[in-house]
Amino acid sequence: MASLLSQSLRRIVSTVGNDRPTSIAKGYRNARIVSVCARKGGVGKTTTAVNLAAGYALRGKSVLLVDMDAQGHCTTALSSELRGMAAGSLSEVLLGRRRDVQEIALRTSVPNLYITVGDKELSSAEGVMAGKIGKEFLLRKCLKVARTHYDLIVIDCPPTLGNLTINALMASDYLLVPCDMSVLALEGVDDIFETVETLSDTLNHDLGILGVLRTRYDSRNKSVNECVEPALASRYGRTLLDTRIPVNTRLAQAQAAGKPIARFDEACRGAVAYDELLDEVAGSLGF
Image 1 (spheres, rainbow, N blue to C red):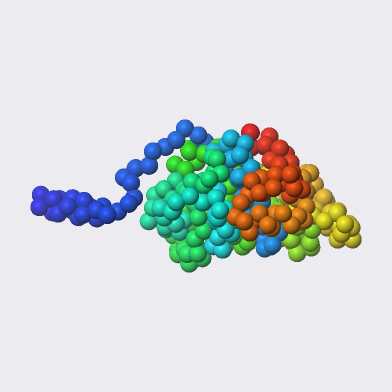
Image 2: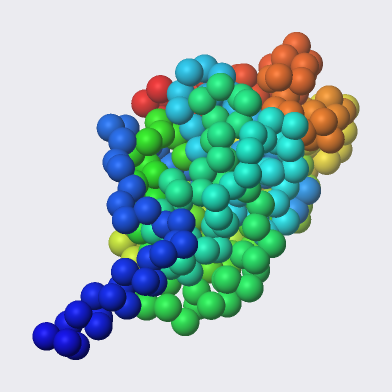
């Protein structure tokens, strides 16, 4: 009896000052989860993740943007829209110090949009995750409650195919792959689809493909386009989206201002293109 009382007291004391709730209330939604993944940096991956999430939020969907890249570029791109302080970090959730991503979701001033803020500790957390049983499923487990609170969860993956990206892909229902008009970006798309095939074969996870999105598209650069376009069409014709995101200085200016393009300059070419993307993938997402 004394031993049982002692154990009970230790459990009570250990919870004092702990800001983790004993339970997290579930919502009534069932979010579609989309990973935005690119093997090469500088192709508009984060720009696409931010404007996909913010765009649907502005259309009335409840959206969570998960900044899974240790560089924290999603957070930077929405810096003017953040409200308050996050209750914790994504690395804390992945390493079991918090129960669910919903605990750390931060409201933004964009209606219906929430974000997990940038976390530089994700790089070191990735190494720790490698030693855990079921390491590929850690994020999926930590999104069980969060996905009941949103219509859409968008994950901005790091530009690598390590544990963090694998976790994102295993937690997701769909994949969106930005690709600029370069041979190196094209090779990166090949790597991603090989990984998706491996996950299907070894872990029985069939990921829906929203599509390959052509980004940083410059119609004036005909020689490069004529080299890359046929290769994209031949390899990924059925998944190649019609939408092209143009080279547009307003997109870069919106990021610098910490705003999604739809709230920075809704009439610019970049904003119009991302609006077209929302229309094109809405059917696949059931929106």
